[in-house]
Length: 327
Image 1 (spheres, rainbow, N blue to C red):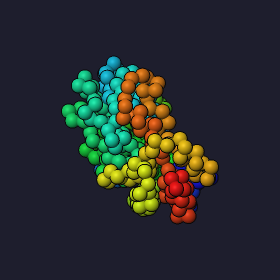
Image 2 (image 1 turned 45 degrees about the vertical axis):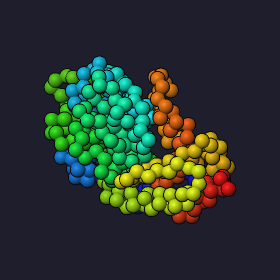
Image 3 (image 1 turned 60 degrees about the horizontal axis):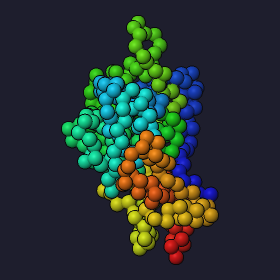
Image 4 (image 1 turned 60 degrees about the vertical axis):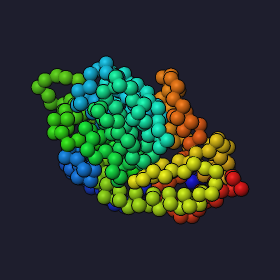
């Protein structure tokens, strides 16, 4: 079976993890500090603060920005469940919004009462950011592209199958030193003279050592994804499929649209190709509401295998399997 997604790891990552283990410093330490500096430079921010997940980074971002506990926060219904989870962890109220044709949050769908919006750049396509709001950009699926630069704050995830990985992990990014200091303070509760609610949200040095290697490899990862995407687009151009065509796409996912989504998924699985819904369930399935674009994306979107370690022969098999469904 060709996996839907997979990490791309090699001897350099093994050596980096071993280096951290041999140092005797396994928890947050110098590798984390170095990874923070390198991420800040790579993603175009003055400050970066490492944490244990993208959800944790988003949770702390809302606190750093001073979002009131009962505030309405705009989030797209069609996105990872982590967005709604972080808003609820903060004590705020998620306000679901519909998507635009690029799958991203439709800025025009954000209610006027929402002064704060969380904007993920889904599948690697840069999103439009609503004007006149405090915005947290989630660049977990768009690292290596232009997304997130100049945001009030941005966060990312380094989950196992993200664009780069530390196994689990996340990063808070900002140009505001005060916001960064808040997140540094709240990610760790040990050895404090005062008491406020803090969290055990730290990244380990073993994770950061792996992440430093992955970060250096990010340009080659993005280039490989774009090469694979170009092959798919050329091969599928005459098929009755909606294809991703956004500019500056980094192709974390290659999502095709078809009214025969379920049948195509079953056909691919029978041929040894694992394809999936790119968002397992939109949030309105749980919280209620009617969001027609998000629902259509859920009904018609199918994500095909695309990742740097996908070899050419397997990509050719994906192409042949998709084409055979329509032939």
